[in-house]
Image 1 (cartoon, rainbow, N blue to C red):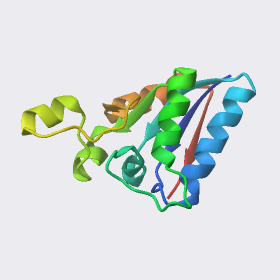
Image 2: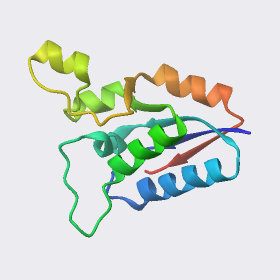
Image 3: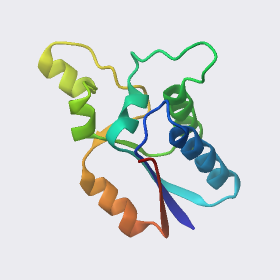
Length: 128
């Protein structure tokens, strides 16, 4: 079964952590993770400049490691990212600054979310 995951809650919310654990469970169950889409405040998780308190997990880095290990497609809503100051290498170069997008994430539009919904057998949304 192909399953897509949409995350809308901030990295500090329980929804981001629950989505991470759910995605790991999909992988362990031998189902296919078609796409993971970060939307609204969830895009804050992919900002490499964010610091978490020492007693909290760095959820963005955990997602990045999971993506690398399992070759997951991790899409970050480009509009949500832009509104929150998150830039990939191309955007950063245009602005004469450095990227703050964690590795293994790609900026993309809502068309990729729609594609995930249509191509997946199931789409699960976490967050507000």
